Amino acid sequence: MEDYPAKLHVDYPEISDRVTTFFRLILALPILILLGLLIGGGDSDPDAAERIYYVGTGGIVVIPTILMILFRQKYPRWWFDWNLELTRFSYRVFSYLLLLRDEYPSTDEEQAVHLELPYPDVENELNQWLPLVKWFLAIPHLIILAFLGVAVIIDVIIAWFAILFNGRYPKGLFDFTVGVMRWAFRVSAYAFLLTTDQYPPFTLQ
Image (cartoon, rainbow, N blue to C red; front, side, top):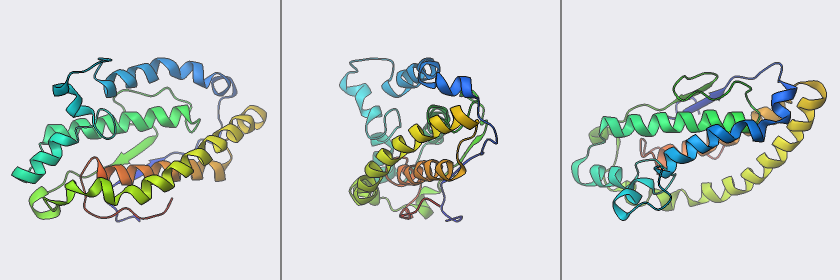
């Protein structure tokens, strides 16, 4: 798993803040609105030209990247940088919302959520036709992740009470939630960010 070209690690906090945990949904609203504006393009009714940039994972440049890999065997660096930084920001927000971290999500600093995604050498590392079917090949993962997402919600509810009572996020629950996020990130790197042709493993590790 250490060799997979998409890595996610969240630092475990020894102590969690009870007050900010109790009000987490309220405190997270401003940053969730900001994230929503980014992945929605800031327009509640984008026209067809804008909508193409918001297919798949929301805000991530997917369809144009597929076309560039398909016909030019190229992944424009600034498209990759946008996809990477938006993904990093999204995972910082998710980590805050899921009680994994107490520091308010930064729009540009790494903080305690470490996400690595190498820039691909398209001509030598990517099959130019595979992006056409990656979304289909990822369906088994997406089905499993849907069930794991329900488990994460239950996990976070339990963790919320645990933090309020003893100020700590149970380590086992923390590792499970981060594991699901890591799994989802690998699937995203494969099927939507399109940075690797290596099929994601079915694991939380």
